[in-house]
Amino acid sequence: MNYRMEWRKAVNAVMLTLTGVCALLAVSVLFFILGYLVWHGGRALNWEFFTQLPKPVGEAGGGMANAILGSAKLLLVAALVGVPIGFFGGIYLAEFGGRTFAFLVRYTTDLLNGVPSIVIGIFAYSALVLPFRHFSTLAGAIALGLMMIPITLRSTEEFLRLVPRALREGALALGASKWKTILTVVVPAAYRGVLTAVLLAMARVAGETAPLLFTAFNNRFWSPGWSQPTASLPVMIYTYAIAPYEDWHRQAWAAGLVLLGLVLITNMVARGVLARGMSAQRS
Amino acid sequence: MATAAIPVKHAGPGWGLRALARRLRNGDEIAHLFTLVFAASVILITSLLVYELWVNSALARHKFGLSFLFTRVWDPIFDQFGALPFVYGTLVTSAVALVIAVPVGLGAAIFLAELAPPKISGALAFVIDLLAAVPSVIYGLLGIFVVVPLLREYVQPFLKATLGFLPLFQGPIYGVGFLAAGVVLAVMVVPFIISVSREVLLGVPGDQREAALALGATRWEATWKVVVPYARTGILGSIFLALARALGETMAVTMVIGNNPQISASLFAPGYSIAAVIANEFSEATGDLYLHALVELGLVLFLLTFILNGLARLLILATTQRGVGQE
Image (cartoon, rainbow over all chains, first blue to last red; front, side):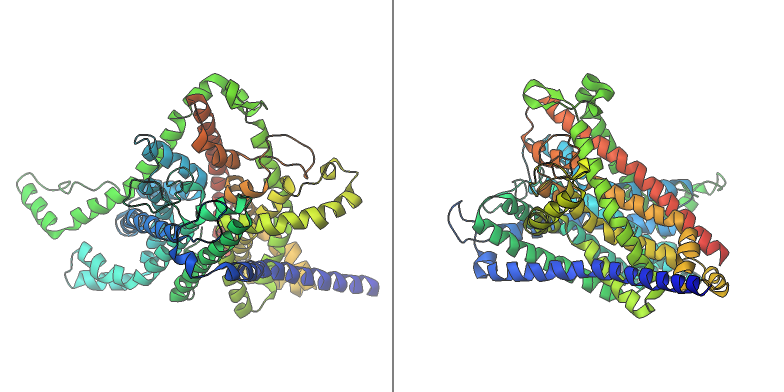
């Protein structure tokens, strides 16, 4: 009897400790990644990195100014594509949606959310690159924009639904029409949540590489306008990491640090804005 | 309600027009229509995506049929395309990832949901969410320069020495290969398992726990024999979600799998995956059949993740609904 109790207590202690170890392991991965990138990337980061074009193979130095600008351009257009569709679609689901059609929209959005990013890339290639016969910034940006839609749409819906009914009814009772209620009462009440969702969506697509490989492609020079291939930070990291040159590896670390920094800071700001209640955002 | 875009439904013939005008001036119908267009565009885009995948893989589908998935020759020069090595690579790397990620993820989720005080649990969950946000190309970068050397120098020789009698751990050691891809994938999907499982576990009603403890169960017994079985379906859902992620993951796998279309029992051998071959060969594909074969691979990937995500959602929904219903 006593032995059995001792045994059960021992199992209890061991297993509970193990779960703690698992949690510690998982959490420490982030700090390891961060530490490793700061260590390797920090040494490679300098003023040139932000201001210079990539040097030809074999020449040391140079930077990724074109990739940084390229990423910014891609994100800008991605947001212009993804945010309106997500935002107004979310309003539709939360405020106007009926049964069948709303269910269909919700279902398709979740489906789109689960599509692997490389498949989005294939889609953008066949819809936006093939017909024009050249890679372009615009095609890459639209591919990223498509990936922003599901997150923005579902979060907008969730956050609009969190707005108390009484607020809506108050506005309606004062004689405001429905759209005016939505525009001046409901959306302002939920705007922090929506903003969070948009920031998180942008942080997610900022690091996406696969959809850009055959849409925005890559470019060793500046890419003026929207119809030429452009460099971007994630694609540059990929290209430089798999290349056999020491100096390129150094720059890949630097670019990795910059990208990770941007993504993590955006995430922290976004989640900080809303502190808690972010569970609505996921899945 | 769903399609109430036309406002004259119940209006008599005499004042239908005036009612329409009033409602339009009111703006509600316009707002309804306006947002409806955006919502409908999501359906349009997704249908277009499926359509493009279907049409642009037609040549390969017609020529190879189902045998596309079961032949192993991938030879663009002679227009022979069999996807078996890629399907194999995708499945093996995902399996390795799950074998590593499920115990760790579940353990961490149990710790966060059952043991850690709420404040610590919240803080750790925040870190886990940040981990899920790390771009996959960064995982690939660390995969190349940290995981691969580590595997080559220490882990694989060790595995070979201890478990070398298994065909899984035989053959020459390269570093890159199925095992490296599996390990990197495991690290990438753990956050998903943790955050979904944690939520499912937190949804288990407290009286389940308390009843077990009151019967004299230890903390671990209450968790493992009562709480976890209660949340079983939801946890399974989180695993399916992780699997869908792993199957579709491109960059990190491409960077460490070795990119060699072969089928090998050894996890040390370099391989290839569906997503990786698309990433590597798509922009260089010459010839329509070649391109169509690659798009068909994308279609396969799409269908796989579609089914898995659907199942995962159902399972998670089933558990969380049950938890809410009984509270």
